[in-house]
Length: 363
Image (tube, rainbow, N blue to C red):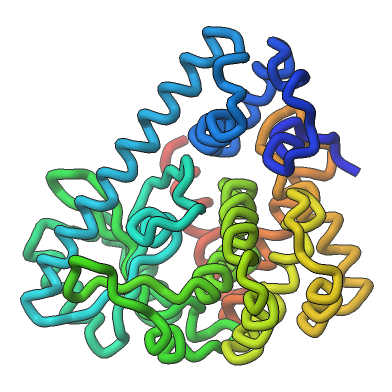
């Protein structure tokens, strides 16, 4: 097994406050949190636990700075959401905020100390072209002009190439689905739209239903292969599940929704690893019921080997000799889930050739 992480212990509540207040332990906690992009969340949780004032002053300074970063992030995403709405309102195009933006604007508990580098939105497929045109008129531009990458996104993926605002520098990812059309998993995006709710004081801005927020977060973490922020995304799931499960009907409804959207496998992994790593209080009967999405006992053991390493902070104190391999294997797995074998082979060959050509051009 990989080394234990003090950050994971802190997030799961399995470490004593006295140990966190100890200077060397606190310093290690902050280092791991920074590497996992979770420093702002640790700051917020320290406040919740009335722990901040007991920490060394220089540690308090780091946490206060991290909180200021998160607050600025939240102001920024609210501003961007308003600007996007003003842009799309011209043609009455509805859009859904996803992930971090949805947590903040929707005022969910997962917004606590949440920081992010881009804004993700979902628009109906039939409005995708018009949405891009309207955004370009308002200063959002694609910065990747490679013809293959353009075709990759527009033909095979569930989103446009990333857009960046020419003045504000913010990055926008425009999705038309939560899963690529070429992926092995198929899910009906129309069902997510039907359950989404409009945000107060907005006219065309929507937030997914709470169960769909959980399921999309699970899809993103366990299918996309972007594990640089893996523990942060797992912490999002933990906070969402803890908050929403106060409703007695939540767990049964979540499992039923995963069946309806054909997302049993991502939910299985989400419940398995939030419970195992962050001690999320998932009732035993629902952990058992979620096994309808299990890939089988042998694959479960292999995924445990990979995810128990890849979901830890990318910090030297949290790695063993297998961590690099685990992250690489999960990256390859994410592409395997996105594309049929022949298409994947062609894609990897093309990307490999481009890297070789670029490397040799600089020699």
